[in-house]
Amino acid sequence: TTEIAKLAAAAGEGNPITPQLVGQFVGLSREEKVWGIQSTIAQGTTEQALGHLRYVLDVSREPTVLVSWALVDLARKTAAASAAIAAGANPGDISKALKLWGDSARAITDTARRTKPRAALEVFRRAVEADVRQKTGLGDPERTLERLVVQMTMSR
Image (cartoon, rainbow, N blue to C red):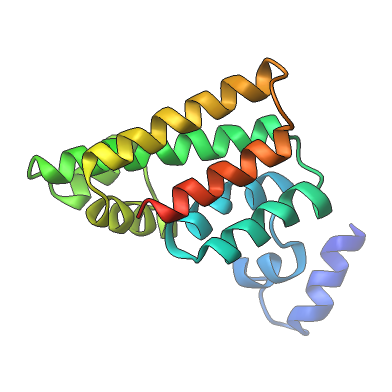
């Protein structure tokens, strides 16, 4: 009830508590920040993507396995979208089939449009390999994720 009182005070007397106001006060959940890395990798520079990765690992303290899952998911969607675009599918159908929504739908389809299907498939293969390495104790998980982020941003 204290949180609702804060929202009511912020909205002002007689004004409704809007979703935008709630979003402003609540912000993103920790898990949402992890999944946000997909848009950063798809649209941002290598430096921005690495900065987002370090934020998720160092500040949010998300487990490397969850971050790896988000990266593998992005690589899978990009590879599938790239192949579909090359085959003549339209972005709306691709978004629906891959269950893409919001900003990530445009980011992923734009990246897929710029990436050759073979290159996108190779990044997906590397993402799966990185995930396996991490889960079998081969190498440092954070360094493995950093290398993968660099590979993903350089491939587009």
